Length: 103
Image (tube, rainbow, N blue to C red; front, side, top):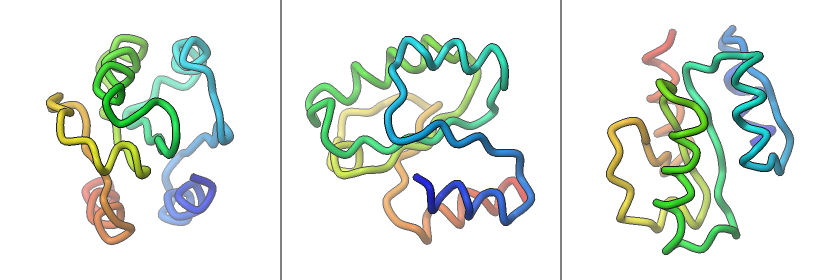
């Protein structure tokens, strides 16, 4: 995530790095301050792959209107994410492609 932060910042976008672990309950509070258009997260160990769709649904409710870019082993392996607000970022090349839409 820190690498991604620098990648986005280098392209001149406003970006806020929230660290390696932000409780879901705090996400809504952060959104009240920053009003993100895009939220990127990495799901690497928890929740389990089976619980990723439910976890993402909870995130969607906390931040209505934002798009979500999700990466990490648990997310990349999950095939049950069906929201049009969510893009699973498979590779760095895919991330660069997504970022180019905002250049």
